[in-house]
Amino acid sequence: MRFAPMIYLVAFAGCSGPQTDAEMRSLYESKKEYFTALVSGIDCNVKKSGILWRSEKEQSSTACLDILEKARIDGIGIDPISQGIMLFPSGRGYSSHQKGYVYSEKELEPQFTSLDVRPNELQPYQRGFKKIDENWYITYEYVN
Image (tube, rainbow, N blue to C red; front, side, top):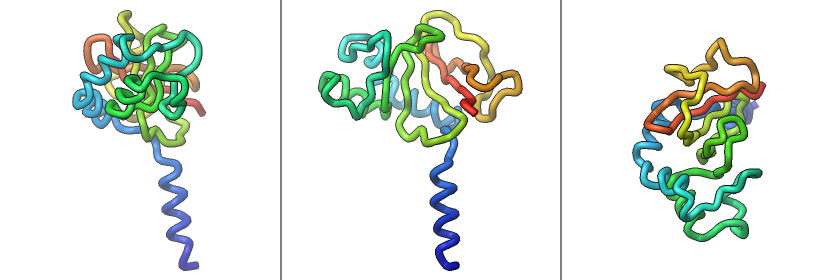
């Protein structure tokens, strides 16, 4: 039974949830210039369908891949709900609670003061938002 603590530790690490709002806001603020560059459309050609993942090196420009890495973002795509640009942070982990970033010029709803815990008003697969800067939001989705 001396392996039981190790198995528990590995299982617990594999089920880690998303970053806190404060951690996500801190990443955004420390990498704001790269976040802005990603949504500017100059170096990254974001397509209407599909997500450009950092691991898909053959489908993107070197400049875009470099910005994704510097921003600590794994993927970028058009959000079908808001029509804004969605950024998928690195290290999201595997959890039924998913968080990311959305850039949208239109106001997104519903907004919450905290997305660290699933808001009771949100149903599974419904998204909630927290505004962190002009046109920038943290998005939360409980995917059950």
